[in-house]
Image 1 (cartoon, helix red, strand yellow):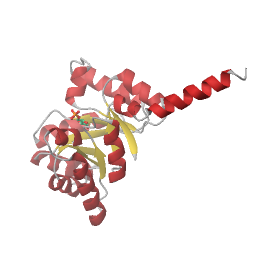
Image 2 (cartoon, helix red, strand yellow):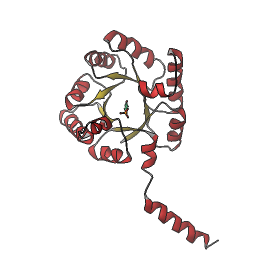
Image 3 (cartoon, protein in one colour):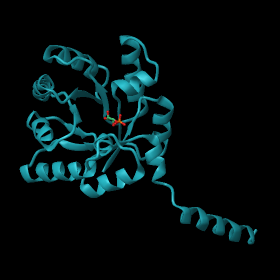
Image 4 (spheres, protein in one colour):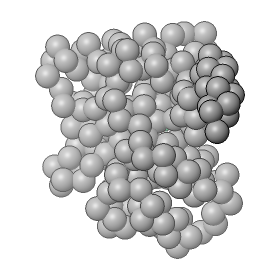
Length: 217
Ligand code: E4P
């Protein structure tokens, strides 16, 4: 399973990249707004900086919701860097646009996916990635990991090539469950990635080893 970081924060992206286990980045308009980026040129420059930090796919989301505006924005985003993946919402014009990008060799990430039916449509349009939002599904009292399992099963059964990108990750356990469920990619906040490191027995065991090592100096 590939690890993407789900943020537009440059310090966090650098920290995850320095770990050596980062395969890519996802952003969305809310994550970009958090970084206080204002205006078209600043947005474009920010994506370029992210692409210069991480050698892997960087999802940049369109703001438009009509076919024409999605195509226009997506082409500009794709021109920033060869690693840009155009992130498109799961709406009728979005599906049409994903098909257009597929036909024009521009990689896409179909976002805001909450059902297997939506994931089938994204795959039919040729999306490179589909992003089911598992944390938001859990928040609404459904089971996000079950949706990942269902989509993985459908894609394997049907031979769809779209990669399942588990998004809206809230905890380290979500990452483990998505790996078990067969997700191709997990996009995670830095806190969830670092949370994978933690186990009290590791801390206790290390302390004991350090104590014993100090007796041998
Ligand atoms: C990433 O592709 C998604 O936009 C993101 O994971 C959504 O996460 P949230 O539900 O925590 O906002």
